[in-house]
Amino acid sequence: MSSPVLSLSVGQIRRRPASFAGLGTALFLAVAAVTLFGSLVAAQVTAPAEVARAAPSGPGLVLIAGAFGEIAVLVALFVVVNALGFTLRQQHRDLALLRTVAATPRQVRRVVRAQVAATVLLVSVPGGLVGLLAARDFLAALQRRGMAAPGLRIPGTPVPALVGLGVALLVGLAATAVAARRITRPAPAVAQSEGVGGPRRTGVPRLLAGVAALAGGGLLLRLAATRPAGELDKAGQASMLGSVVLLVAVGLLGPVAARVLAAVLGAPSRVLAPRAGWLADANLRGYAARLSSAVVPVALLVGLSGTMLVLTGTAEHVVRATGATTTVTAESDIWLRGAELGLLVCFAAVSTLNTLVALTADRRREFALLRLVGATRRQLLRMLSVEALLTTAIGVLLGAVVAAAASGAFSLAVTGSVVPVVPGAACARVVLGAAALTVPGIVVTGLWAVGGSAVESTGGERG
Image (tube, rainbow, N blue to C red; front, top):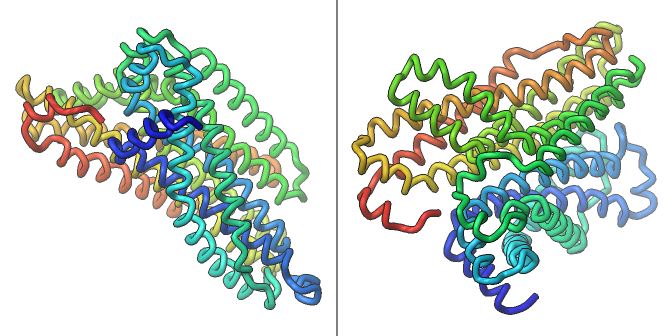
């Protein structure tokens, strides 16, 4: 990689550290997760023969690590694509300006790839250390429940951390191929004229990819729904994977879905809060790409958590209805699903908070312009409060639709009915948790963003 490209990439990270915070956090979690589960595999592979031959209860350490790692990588790709898309929108004009001074699309993509590679390298050491420490705690928890041989130990080899670094780099480069198209595809003058709010229309390739993901998720849910009643685990795995693919479709089709739902949910806000509601509704519908970046992490949080909770509740109901006795394996399965849910919630919660805080902070210049034309800080905070509630509602609704589809397919397979067993209290906590992340994240950041001198804010650099 040439020195000018590297210097330009590192310079952008230094100038806009807040824009790269979400991307860095997502890649940090990817490195930590892969290191964690890679360390579990290394513990099994490097164990003495007499220890490795010990037969634990449950599926085995390698299968547990593989299943967790598969979901973690898929969710990491989803989160990194969303975070990188936001990062590129913050430097959209800078990258588009490079194209107006004769930089080719290939050179711009090299700059973006260099930024991703530099970010991965920055988070690789702390991510590897956290993953290693988490692997020791996770292995100890598995051993206490009889799911891992007592003599297993996490080795001190750096191979899992290096694998985590490599996987995070591959995930970041794959995200680059998806997210950089909006800057490199159009003509330089068109790219320069587009603001950070994004284009008014979603590109055809993105729409086609979203439809393909939607179809793929539907096929996986059909596979889950047609499993025999006795294959509860396989139906659950297909349903969970189907929910992840559907959430990828939500991410790709997010601007379209967000604009439609904003139009539907925005009408009541105009009636209940005429001034703040009108401004909030106009902002959300006018900047569909920005709204999509905000609601997709919320949908991820609600969709994954809701799917996991409803699948678990339905499975437990089936076990009780069939008169099966509670075994160590059944209790371990419940604990494993809880651990997997915790991992997914960690990814989704960090993505949600980082994205919402960065999106709101980036609107400082926009708020300053509104203040210059007569809006007060109180009015702007009211507008942000309405936006936060609408963003939460849209994200929860999209996530709930995904969870309902996935859990309905699972329920059809194991009970014969598309109506699953819904743990109401647990699902309500998920919705409240999403609101607790979204509303304060937007409003508290907004308190900072609307402060200071409006003249200075309008004259400052965006992002």
